[in-house]
Length: 554
Image (cartoon, rainbow, N blue to C red; front, side):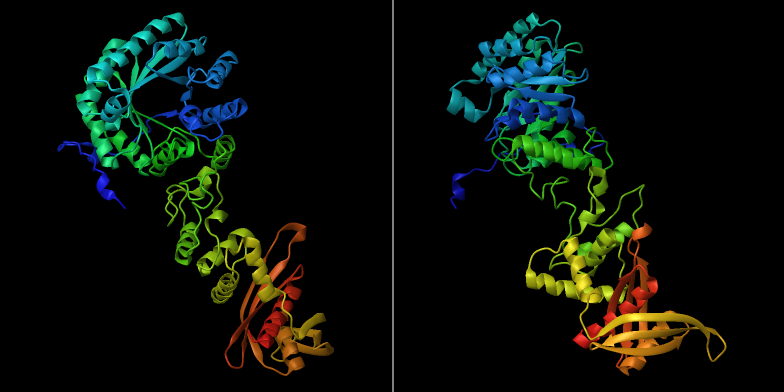
């Protein structure tokens, strides 16, 4: 690959940088640009009804600043802005934001779209980067500043037509990261002065990484250098707008806030041109995971994702942080075991579970989804699925054995075993076992044993190789008596080494599940399971299932 044709990005000379020693302790102001920057990047842009649905979602989540379009460039955008104003769909605490280039005719048209709005952010921009000045516009620094100042004057004049609207100016030196820092400060300061920025005349300076050109630490240095040297810093809100060309948009925004920014623009799930805008969901949830209120409500992540996918017509990747189908899922056996143990000891006041940075329930997911079983899974994963989907807890020796059975099935068939398939494997292995032994009927009676203690007598009719055999046995309890009766029928000795019984359901449909481990004369253990609404029947069936498995060679 011809790597020599590229040049490394020049670092910022900032030896006393302060941002590395800072910590994020509060959420920045958020601005969604899904309806403009996100929408313009779609193969099939949103229809008006889809745009309105997305607008409603953004309000549900809690955004108070929403870029709604580029009304001078698109009749659809213009009509949408008019619709939400005329239908009074903008809550009193929400600022709509409209984007516009620094051109007189576009500014006039944009102001037309704002008539009747209570408050709005007028987002003015022009390109300032060295490359764009030289290649695209052929303009000097002074000419670029002049273009920006003309735009400000046009905005000031045009908004006099809408005195009922509180207008905040936002200015973006587009491609800020490719602009000399001293020039970025010069043009932004000139714009701020021309606007007349002050306590009663707010303004936003937006510093976009229109194309991500460097590592996130360099972007943070650029932001800190700008904030230190911008004369109007205390009068302006500093905003970020990062893209994801290098895959580090989230990190760049986080470090940029540490470096002094107050506000972040982005989209849900990172939709946007090329590799996308920064993902506001990830940024917000990163704060949440550190105990900081993100000031956005993402507690129903499935709903947020569903609307975004429907309107954008782009699926959210299964590995997308906090929102993808598999982000809380472990297939690895060691991970599954750690999650299972962590979940059994979780403290609701302070979350600390291995491999789960947040509680899945906080975004509307279910604990059962955290563990799924395939050929990479171990006993911890098998136990977790059985316990959380079927409330079935296996004795450890049986769990170890069954995990090996699952491993063989997964290796043979490939892919994942969903909970139903896993339970089917268990039932086929231990419960529904073909073999020579079957229970036809039994009768239980209380008796006195030879030592004078209370005991049980079991009279049983078994089917052995299709032949009915009658037998009886005595013991301290029904299971022991049944075992002795079976031993006489088949002329073999064995004992119950493990016995575990639990209810599988509740109410009138409840049935008992019995798990039995039989130990034969050679010391081997063979497991079987029985299920019935009658607990004794379940126990007896489990004994015979174990014998049938031993007959099969299990």
